[in-house]
Image 1 (cartoon, rainbow, N blue to C red):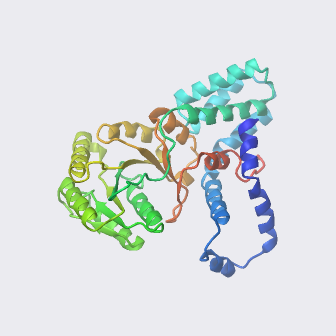
Image 2: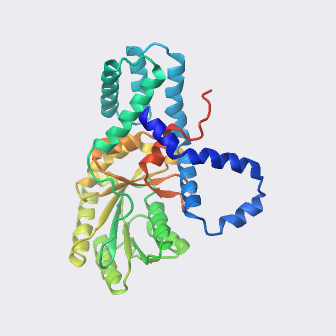
Amino acid sequence: MGLINFLKNKFSHRQDKEKEEVKKDIPVAKEEQEAVKELSSKEKEKQIEDKYVAGLDKSRIGFTQRLKKLAATNKVINQDYFDSLERILIEADVGVSLSLELIKETALEASAKKITDASELNELLIDKMFVSYANKGGSFSTDIQFAKDGPTVVFMCGVNGVGKTTTVAKLAHKYKMRGKKVLLVAGDTFRAGAVEQLTYWASRVGVDIISKPNSDPASLCFDAMKKAIEEHYDLVMVDTAGRLQNKKGLMDELSKMVRVIKKVIPEAPHEALLIIDANTGQNGIDQASVFKEAVNITGIVITKMDGTSKGGIILSIRDRLALPVKFIGLGEKMDDLEEFDLDKYLYGLLIGDEREVA
């Protein structure tokens, strides 16, 4: 049906490229030498596609291959079949509410079109998943929306342990490579080791940092905004605390930081990104509502997608929060944080390497 064929056609060049690469037999040393050369835009695009395919490997096995197995072992479409589909969706972290909605819409259309083939039904379900993401409202914007004049301020939120600090570092690296002058703000001032960790990453990436351990984070933000204006920084990234044990205290702290930032740069923060660990699933989405009480969240960063089989969380985020996923973590390397691309995500989740179902 529509979406599967569209994705196969769009990424058909991958199959030809992979066939060519099998014939080359390039030594490792030669590959490493080639890696440091300037890549063409097509080669860069291919690298990103590879990251999506590799990063969604566990999700593809846990979702798409289960759909294929279900279709291969069930010749009759009945309520038991739909119950199995529902279970696969929920276990992929699509969420209960959205899973039920997708199953209902798929069943109604299948009945109207008199679809009796299980594989065709599964492709109809996949089409519904795409339409659901597109129709849930909210922005489709990826990347950071830079201010026309002066520093662009990005406020980074998320509970401890989701990879917030390393995400700050990866984004700093990404934009430094694009020629931006970047300043990191170590706003998690009271957590042991937090300032040291961000300082380490700033040194490794080669960007500046401002910090005041054990001081008021809002006061630090004030100094950081002044510095950003006076020294003509392009991008300011504010790391923040994430201790939900004291929910009210954290929300008050974040709200105060935002108010102080606005006193210096009224339009800021220009972006407020919420970091969600893909492994936390629906709990991670529940956390979003807590942070939205204090900060106007503009987008989501999904980390550790390569370590989970629950790739459906992106659909659930869109369904429950109506927010764009701006970046997706597909590996541990510094350049493995990519701007979210819906087509590449669906290709990686649904098709990938086209391996046979065991």
